[in-house]
Amino acid sequence: MSDLAGSQRDRAKARRTGQRTSLERSEGREHAGKGGCAIKKRLILIAAGALLLACLLPMPFHLKDGGTVEYRAVLYTVSRVRRLNGLEAEKPFQEGLIVKLLGIEVYNHVE
Image 1 (tube, rainbow, N blue to C red):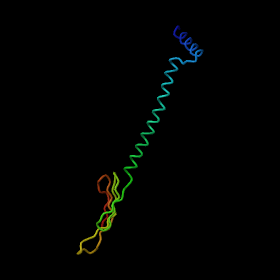
Image 2 (image 1 turned 180 degrees about the vertical axis):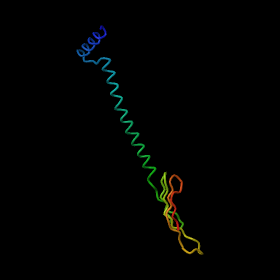
Image 3 (image 1 turned 90 degrees about the vertical axis):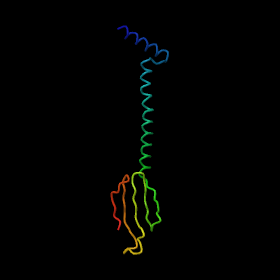
Image 4 (image 1 turned 135 degrees about the horizontal axis):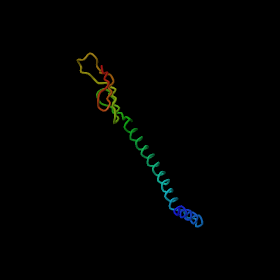
């Protein structure tokens, strides 16, 4: 019972002097920390999104084999093939599409 009366006296004194009690100060610290955490989470999400975007955006590479174009990204490669065949072949060009995901060829339609 004496603790309750003592805390009431502390609150009354704090109100008169314009200061906060130790309980009010500790509650204020809890709320102040949450705002910084939200900013960190937002920055991490923005960084992760930028990294994912960088892994998915392709850059075109033009090969000098008759017109092949490779679109390369970190996670995949798409090749539009147009190669010159030898002089003795029926068709002068090989044409088609090759798709690789993580370096593994998943589609190849080159004729």
